[in-house]
Image (tube, rainbow, N blue to C red; front, side, top):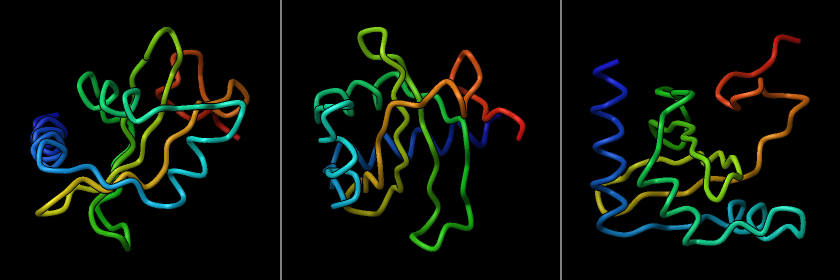
Length: 108
């Protein structure tokens, strides 16, 4: 658990410097059924909980964070870098793939 808290601290430190939205994230955020704003992402970062950790990601250590924003669950995959936080994707999780608290994937 400490490791997740430490990584969350690194994420927030990177975000405080700069947040870079990768093209895939912008496309996903701007879909008509999602309309996730950059303000929403900042709020997710403020209240984030790490729900999946990807230490071996080819883009560098990344993770999926989660928070409810205005009663909407939002998942954000991000990767902290020295100078910025890369937002890889962001979306509204669906009930078919995620359990009722949107923190764990359903078993296939």
